[in-house]
Image (cartoon, rainbow, N blue to C red; front, side, top):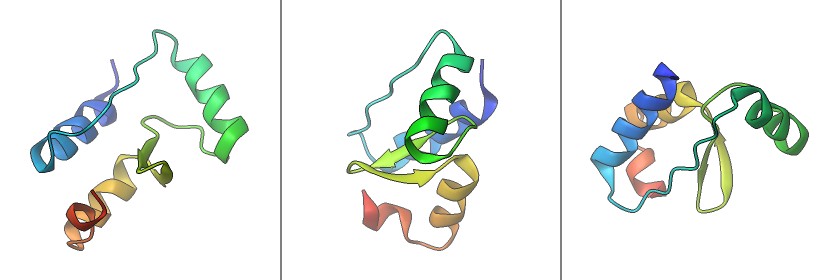
Length: 72
């Protein structure tokens, strides 16, 4: 249901086949968990190698800077 989530999955999936997607039926529950753990309350919440990197905007910016593929 989340357009930014679909865009993040497409971007990351185009760079690597080693992605894990954890989807929740309740966006509000996931947002509450994200807020509690890292202060981020929008979707998606992207982690690379266990490190929180942000949402789609941050992932897209890393890709445009040529840094995202190196991180994967």
